[in-house]
Image: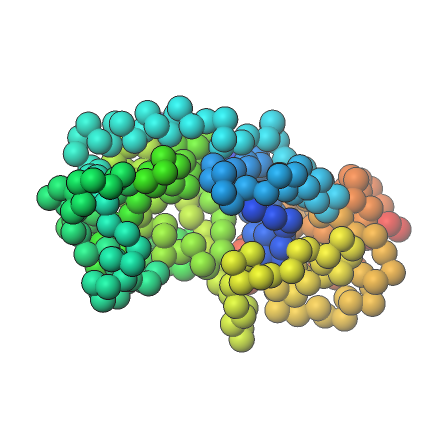
Length: 326
């Protein structure tokens, strides 16, 4: 007898380094709509593990913005800053099995090695046999020698990466004691039982090391969906590239999200400009569909009239519907 399917559990996990930018709303919409289209749960986690990057008040502002845009998450909001003991325990488990080593190399020293990687200079393995500078405070780095990871992305297809050739080794705990997001996300996703992760193309290169870490810790690997940048490509939509905070006006912003994800407005700009739009999900005659609806709170009952339909490039088995009251 086949085991029953595991219920869909997805999440959105912003870093509170400032207000939400447009890329954050695109990522939130992708994960939220995919979860709802599959009848699943969607959770919110605040990745506030790195104190220097955490801006006071940003987490509350993010939660307020998501609520204003109509995102309805399931369960309480989880904050990584409250779960450091779980991450430290996972790191100790890896160290006990010799999967991590102490590293005293500086970024300047790594850059001088001249080894190219997928995200800049690749770690040359200087400290694998022991710290190169015994007097320095050491970071802890994951050993990725002879590791090749292959996985199937729901949108990108088969992905294969040699971790040693790509990165050489990745830090799981900085010299100042801060634990890496890579480790924290692996622990959190497993503990929460997340089955699906939807995110942007800028994170595709880091997914193989995430999966390798999951396997070392005995965690299941969720199904990854990595949506591509639009054509023609644009720069990374993040705070690092000085992306502007998300527009407080929900209508224009949701229209931009629609354009980003479908590649067309189909004449909807004027329609949006006249109405207050919220994000939601409903079941219509032909099964679950993605819905941008009016008003934001619960217009899913009888009398809803579909105004526009646009198939999504990211999830072709679903549709994005624009609805208005009869």
